[in-house]
Length: 82
Image 1 (tube, rainbow, N blue to C red):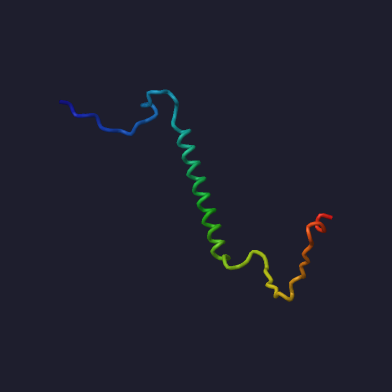
Image 2: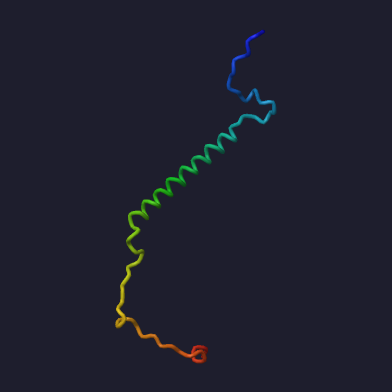
């Protein structure tokens, strides 16, 4: 009985279908992983920014007392349509 051949990593020459090198798949995978890493970094930066300013309002807010609020006049439906 003969010893089995040593296992070797397959190469493009071993591909029975002549599609050429697998660089297209490798490039797409590398590009996809880079995009995922960039999105991950952007998400972490956004989370960090929110964590630092979560208790601060986006716009200055002034609380008015009831006496300081402008008067509201209710009009009937016919007057509002005019």
